[in-house]
Amino acid sequence: MESNGTFLSVCMNPTLQKTLCFGRVIPDQVNRTESHRLDASGKGVNVSRVLRQLGKRVVHLTHLGGELRPLFLALCQRDNLDVRWVDSHSPIRFCYTLITGEEPAGAGPGREAPGGRTVTELVEEGEAVFPGTEDRLLSAFKELLGVAGTVIISGTKARGYGDALVPEMVRLARERGKRIILDVRGTDLERSLSHGPDLVKPNLVEFVGTFAPGLASPRELSGDEEGVKSRVADLILELAGRYRTRIVLTRGSRSVWYADGSVPGTDGAEASSPVFDEYLVERTPPVNTVGSGDAFTAGLAAALDEGYSLRDAIAQGAGCGGLNAGFLKPGVIRE
Image (cartoon, rainbow, N blue to C red):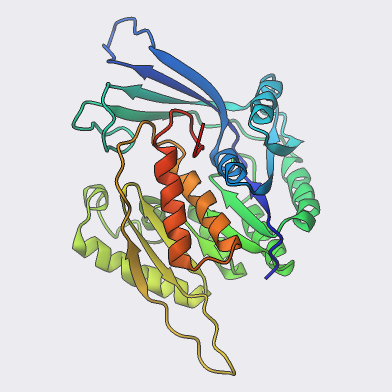
């Protein structure tokens, strides 16, 4: 497998992320923010920003369009990001993080913490890209494969892209001997597995929603129910073994579940069966949890590129996710 220390981060849903902080929000009243910020975001941008802060070379590939494109690029330049883009003729979406309360405490997005702090995401669905965008993006992807050792594809696609695009990117990267990490879900993930990604990293809700939507109720998934763990473990092991890949499921501040099915046999021997395991995550009081999953992906990818074992790479990913949660800005591990 080729590994040259350069990463290609692909995301097909760029975002301008507005973060708004309030002591409290009173419905049907004028509420004035105590502080706010605007950042270039989207999962691929967050991954790229953390990789840069880890000292890695990274190129970010996306589409851009509309009147806000210069603003998006200026924000990326401020973060020293190398952005390559194709014209989608579609406006960049806004997403909003609403943070209320005064005391940082451990709670996921939209869930109230003991101290009263909440982190709520309000997500705009992006407009469809114009015809021809997919061909331009795939052409740019093929060119950039020459500079990358690791390819990371993150997030959902904007409307207008076909279901064959992500699997085709995985196929092309595999043909070129690249390490491939996927943080995608649904059809993109299902159809990509047969092309041999090295590692897939959805969160638990995305994984269950993709492969077993009837497996557990939302209430069960939000807890640490042993019955859910057992059923998910069986599914992880089956998929990891069938596709000879590594599956890592993040669960916010709870433990990470994973299985490694990528170990080949030697001298004609049959490959060993994957084993389900979990990694306990150190809980830290969050300021803003948005982007923590992307920081995890970046830390994990960087560690694998440096030759870490899967478990040690997960530990670095979890550390980066925790660091990100300590900052107001999404997708960072330091100011």
